[in-house]
Amino acid sequence: MRRRVLLATISAVAVAVLLLGVPLGIFGARYVLATEEQRVTNRVDTLARSVDNSLDRGDVVEESTVQRAAEGSEGDLPAYVVVTLPDGTQLTAGEPVSPPTIDKAKLTDKNVGVSMTVSAIGAYVKSAQTVVLVIIAGIVAIAAGIAVAVWQANRLSAPLVYLAASAEQLGSGQVRPRLEPSGVEEIDLVAAELARSADRLAGRLAAERQFTQDASHQLRTPLTALTMRLEEITLASDDPEVVEEARISLEQVERLVTVVDDLLAASRRSQGGTTEAVVLADVVHQQEEE
Image 1 (cartoon, rainbow, N blue to C red):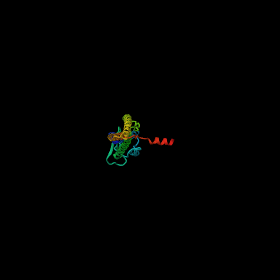
Image 2: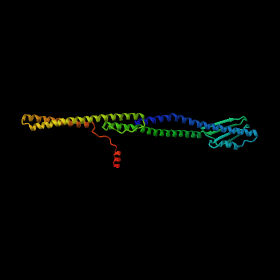
Image 3: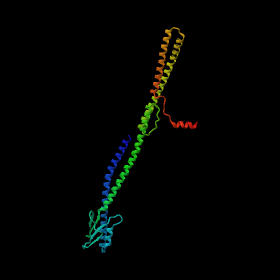
Image 4: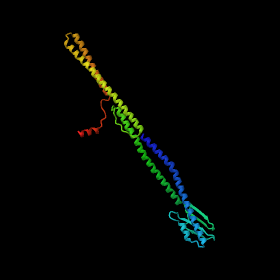
């Protein structure tokens, strides 16, 4: 029972983690890659607007502007930026990037070309970190599921173990086993029925014991009187034949008494004697009070 509950619960948790974790990991990795691509696109758009604004004011596009775009803000990946002005002048910043790369380019209304190349390795690392976080979350979920499975298995199996022990006590002649509520409705119903069966069995055993004692007493009384009468006849009669017949009858009566004793002893043994479960704590407390 306990093993089956453990396997069922752990299997259910593992399946749930796989069904949710695998798509979540894939979605998380793709989301991180898409986010990095969108950040590169935003950087290109920002640089293009800055260059267009400088041309509108008639200012010279400074290399520092391109350099800041290549460096990016906090959390941005280093980029290689190329800005092509309308007169063909090219401004570059950053170090050339080897594949795999994320490339984004834009041509503005002022006929300015802006391209930005970012190494995709950094994006892949962030995606891998996301997948690792999902895996760790899955492991934690499985560990929590195992803990819940162990608790649930113990909660369900322990009452069954006590119930089996109570049934064993009932079978060994202890007709009043101690049954504590388990909190599980089905198990408590079985325990209640077992307690009722124990009460009925106790009543039947008590009736049988009383019947055996009454039968033994009712048989012993006339047998004792018959024995005494035969002994009187043996002592009082002078006829040898009468004495011999009385002696033979007396032996038969003694044999019948022996049979009654044997039947009574066998009945007591088959009923398990008179032993019952004793709560030692109650006895100790009683002795302490006395």
